[in-house]
Length: 289
Image (cartoon, rainbow, N blue to C red; front, side):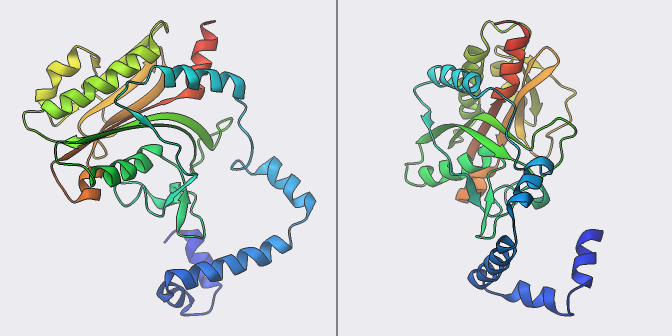
């Protein structure tokens, strides 16, 4: 436990932690909602103004929503026919990130109803992809896209918002051997991002091999190799992607084992990639496009 957790539990009667942990999920939810109702009843209008000023979770973004909508519309128009758009829920199942990846739940805003505020659209799309793949034959595949504003609990530093929109792709298909499936998914994703970034000065697509050298020929034709990258190792498998414009990182991605774990089938392959539309607006504005 962290020092803050130890301090809180020390103020409660002995056995409280064990008693709460043993409650059925619905009973714990009822208890927490009761506490929230009591606390909300004490909130006054002045408290709301204070929270608006000091709580980074509730402050609006400074991005021009009109510019964001225009960029989003242009990206949607570039989407390949294989992809289906998904309007994601603002919340995901509790553990959507930590259950399939090395992500601390402390980085996620957890709700009282067994859900969490969406912090990574790739995880939510992977769950949806696995759900759809279960209704397909082995030779089927799923390609999903979403543009969603995400909220993360970690502090990104002064001037940085706790919430931001990402345009996200997730593809899931069965491995057919020799890296053929993976190469096809990479070509689909990278080709899309090339179209999105066409004409943007300094835009680059990068790749890093993380266990599948056979993918290098397919990647070399579409992106620049970044062999020294260490970030994402242990999170991504086989290969990772990065999208930049000059010294600004616009996006990231790579293969994960999420749909394989969600479906209980080790042959399932899942490729994710995403791009920050707010950063893209900043870069485009900087270049006067």
